[in-house]
Image (cartoon, rainbow, N blue to C red; front, side, top):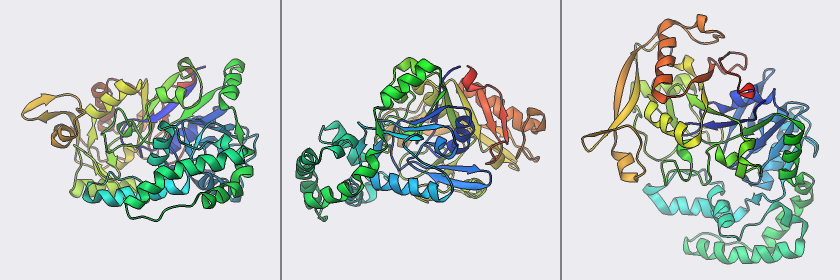
Length: 430
């Protein structure tokens, strides 16, 4: 059986929560491998809704090991608050059910302060961060001044590292006119949570090697989407980590062959939160209707999502750069009742036809979508669990998407309910 990596193929918010939950019920180990608490998954288990940000989706299912890998940046206060939240909802969390990579970098209070001050300084040129310190924490990691989970076990060295870290951050905060931090203040805050967090700390790479040797099924759970990847997305309007499936190996401490089938979660239309180019955005009645029907508000921020037609050219590009084997098409039911549905098949740039989204920021903002119009359907797809239950025009829409993105639909989701899924290909058996 193959291990499975789940990633978003658009700008995030593709409905990964339901699909990851469906897969995690069949996995032995569920691993988060990038991002931080800027991500958000909504799960519905036996009528109870869980909104998770840092914890892997497997945490809500007994008998699963949940892993936060070294590629994640961890806000210790946010993590412990989330653990308490799921406990209050009847979920047991112990060091036997959750482990956190001892070499994962921490998000500290000054990271959020810098994040928000930088966004304010950008003014109209803001890049739409969540303000939770994700980017500055990754910057510190790359600059080799970051503080990691394992540092909490070494108090004397920890204070020295904090002092060195604040040389950088306080200078930046002062320059931006923001309040600075004292080393003792940060140190004391970390000492209050250090012992609690350290009980979950472990060499994740070793535990995952044991899983490999024993034949356990591992689900690698991604956050955000490929078009938010720091290398392959709509830079600079991106997240601060790699979102593509290759990061599952790096961000968990396993070899590249440990990642088997790559499932790209793909919404049947397109949404985006925050700033940045969006070629198929519909700032009109159609976009409003998509947002209302799809309840398009961010799980983490509550921000209203921008909505538009399906961009097949962009998803095809994401499939190529991310190594996606098949997609899980979600929210098909949101398109019920449209007389016509448009699909972007490519772009025009300065009068020239192109079939990909270029890297240049100006080019991304200038491309004009080339649409193909598909007949809509008046019947309902909501709750369908077989192809036979779908209107003929809905099936035609799905098949046309497959042709355009050059990848098969492995799963088709027809409502937020976990069992309202049409399974075409079992990723764990591929």
